[in-house]
Length: 303
Image (cartoon, rainbow, N blue to C red):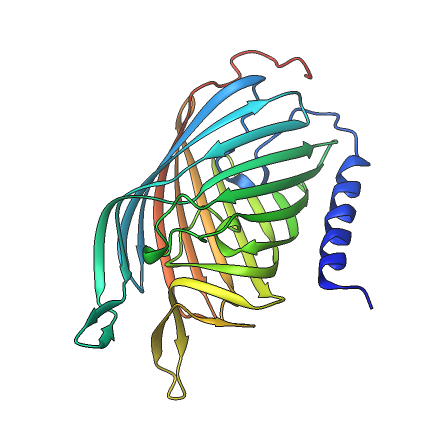
């Protein structure tokens, strides 16, 4: 039987090979209707996202994430980013008299983990594919669920096909950190350990507006360490919070996401996100303003 490490690298090879077999015939595009972390302009670019987010578990948080990117050509781009939390909340362990309690504490001016990503994308006609390899470095605060405390990675392949106003899509990936999946939403924990991620849904072109509806699954395939707060239902069906867990399935998560994107002016857009977790029972609502410094004012070399 192949080992887990062997299966992991076989998956990575298959995803990479699938991406390399295609030849792009059109300009790159932001797949899935999300703000594009790899803008379609050659050379250096900067994207800044400012987010206000409310979680049904921990309340409000506010964070800014600048992303520095470089596009080599129509297919290949890289970027690096680090989130800065103006305000965030979590259930933090406090020891007093030999007893540990977990009060909800607010903190200001904290960093999350620094990430670096490589993106290979192609859009031949109505078909689009994007393969993203992401690595993260432990620069964040794990007490508030903002860090994995170790270097982490994720490899994800995104496929979509345009049919009229609809763009059905599917994603499959593998990695060892929950924070590198669905990064538009910040959860109250970071889970570290082997996990597979899946997503299926569709983007919907509403003229000037873009709507994206997705179902997602994060499935642990090995032991997990969890930093921060995870919610679970007890035997009576009531949601309870759990801190710093360890085990084979403690970080499993699945549910639905919805995102509506509204362009405000050249390089500036507003988006609203909603995520409902079925297995963990939380709701997250957020609003994001994204600003891309360099926009394609004229046709690019590949057009």
